Length: 297
Image (tube, rainbow, N blue to C red; front, side):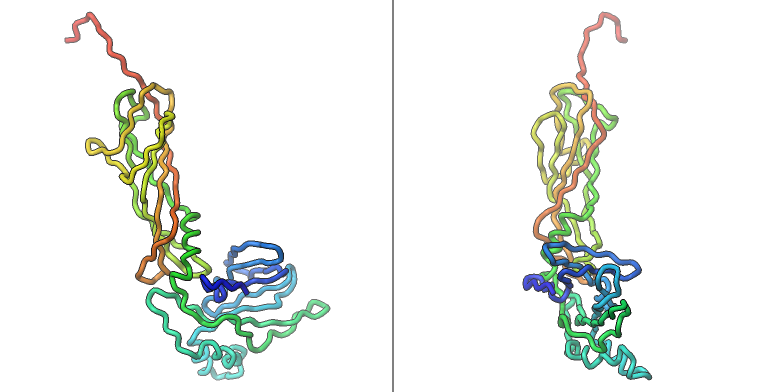
């Protein structure tokens, strides 16, 4: 087990030392890291609602099975016609960790108690029977936003936030020297669905500041104002030299909030995320005045 007092990962992550973990068939994904002989894997996708997750040596039968038991599990199996069924037989063990009626507040996520069963693989490769009652691994718990705060900060920095578009005026791919070139963007907050340690979460990204690079060697311009279209424009740049092509880029800095899916309260995320937008190449012309003798009327 991994124990992290700050985020209560004891109840969420599984670890196998020197053991390769093989996911079961079906729609399954794992994330983790390897450090020395330690492999950490998110197992919540299969253990969160009483489902099981099996692990064993690579290429061989599983020797461990993890499952979660919720408060209502044994109440259901006590009513079965066959009280000796495999599941009802484990109730005495389950009730050690789930008998107490654990109440989670509206902003928390209920996580059932985690158990492990084991079995022995014979010398000929034949697996034995699973142990009748699982060993308790982690008590039932209420996962709070504070438990997920560090993971939320990492997620905000890596999630695929859609960069806001760049709008340039004049709009036809060219502008003039010594005339303001207007730029603005049309931002909006984005709500992204993800999972943190196997728990469904929503992350809300909100644009905080905008840094413009006008591609002519001048320094970047940072503002909290996204700009606006002519004639109410607030962000513009004046090119001093003609150019065959300049590339305007926008870096947007985002702050974030998150909540456990289905709960009402948003919690601020530490740190920020950035996205980069690019406009189509812009040609800068120099307009020259000329005196002519012809009558222009």
